[in-house]
Amino acid sequence: MAQTSFSSMLPSRLQFLLPNKYRTYPDPIVPVVRLSGPIGAVMPLRAGLAMASVAPLLERAFSVPGAKAVALVINSPGGSAAQSHLIFKRIRAFAEEKKLPVIAFVEDAAASGGYMIACAADEIYADPASIVGSIGVVSASFGFHELIERIGIERRVHTAGKSKAMLDPFRPENPDDVVRLKGLQRQIHQVFEDLVRDRRGEKLNDSYDDLFSGAFWVGAEALDLGLIDGLGDIRTILRQRFGEKVQFRMIEPARSPLLGRLFGRRSLGQSSLIDPGEIVGALEERAAWARLGL
Image 1: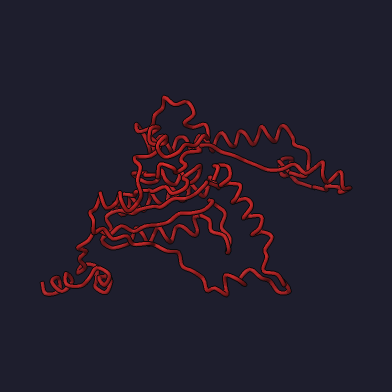
Image 2: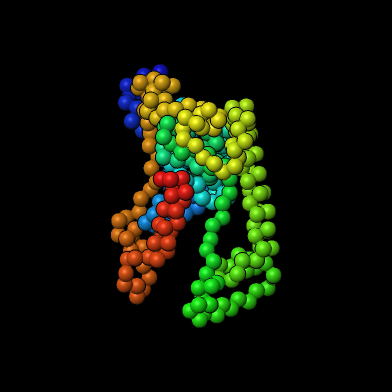
């Protein structure tokens, strides 16, 4: 009894010093995980989302003692379908295991894979100017075969398996390859559509023909379509839900030392800090956001 009384005298920020059974949490706690950037594109100097980097944050968030819910702040134009689905499934697994509701809040965008991740939440909120949706699959590349012919370069490719060099950008496009690609895209698109229907259920406005066309909408339109549950920001919504004294517990990724971030990718004899891979990655990220007009 004395121990219980003692625990109630400690401020919530010091409750972690006590064993779990003696802790008390007078104010509601909501762990917050920020999921920002393209999905499947993670490099040392450029933020992104992948299962390997997100899973530890989710585990910490769902393990916060006294948590009333877990909040996801999402700002992503999409990316890898597989990584999006893996993150979605991990969120649902933790939510069911810990019996905690999940509430998602969209910032600039939850588009394509970003919206797939948002669907892991029990409720989705967005700003009126947020971009939401893009329930589709895209594959983009370039064709360089005429360029290399013009400058006198001969492309040599040897494969075991007739489809191994499918969609090689340095060779003329093969119609059979395009048919194969579109078949794969249809299967992935169906997985995405089934997931949205399962999670959003009767909230969806199926009378709108373009719902699964890959189109995207601003927050107010997304609300009418049933893609989200309301308009608002994390602070306002969670204070309405859990009271003015609700505590936000930010779950931050571990940061490597500054020198390690600057020099970690340099190999012996490499004199420049500029990584061509980072440049290409940055251009791809910019293109992903540009498809949403952002």
